[in-house]
Length: 455
Image (cartoon, rainbow, N blue to C red; front, top):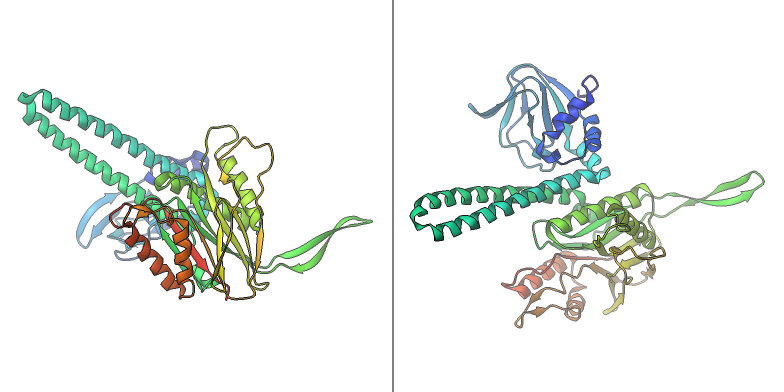
């Protein structure tokens, strides 16, 4: 059985972790936390560490020994001390493409995917480091493109050197193609991170079987995201003044709640994805660790968290989020809503009702001289009711015969038309309608629409 690493200098572990591509831009103190959760394994010669076709779930660092990466009798590479293999398995569980076998007695450090996720959820610096790698690669790409432009000018001015320059141009194109591949690979890596941060649709369906989530990013990664949590009943105490001081009197248990939100972050693509990771991490802390479940208070604490994380009180940063958040109490049959610029739609008796979100976003401004508060609205569900929360991407999509926006009015009419259908069917209709509407026009923005009802 693996045992926690104890007998190796922590500095050495951190130094080796620094050589791993995914951790190249990660801060020293975060690497220390990762190093502390490494486990150690000992394997005799000819041990099969990784079997081709098995799902990826761990990264390995060779402390002492050697392994070969192979497919049958063909050896791709031999790895020795301080080499790393399996690092992409931290975020991608697709089947392994080769076998890994020890060449002699080998001591390994192992980092499991589940353990890495727990560390990453508490250290947003890991995500920042990965995004810094993406930005560095993008800058290198721009430099290479500028070099290519200069080469083309040289071809026009120096015809006598055209053969030589064409050869150089082909080389530059090959380099740029490789860099484009690396950037695309890195963005796909970021998508794995973002996908890991949001709850699975199966988790949402387990709490809200009558629901759908239509999530269609504009790019590979998205600035829109959804988030979900299911709370456990918590004890309720009331503070009472007595002769012995303030005493807490037990008053029973709070009811179980389901929380779901649709969030639209500043921008899309990699910048929007970074904001979405910041938001998801903060929501996990606010709801699951601090136990805050009132929708207006969740938004209030999230606003402060974003402002602090982006230093918006002392910088010019204006990034933020629009969002609609619902807290569902099945026992009390209520839905409590708070919004930051995003509304809630709900349909009863074939009539659509709208509750507007507050006028201010989450984050984005620093000149306020008072705490930013958000309104809370509670809907008593005493008749069949369907709820919808969403970003502005659907209604802002250009398309149709006149290449105009879809607009909110048409979006409301569409929801009224489909709200009595099964939720999976609603999802498919929304997806088809959007793609038919835009036709050949590129998607304007990230899109998310969430529909649900209480059983």
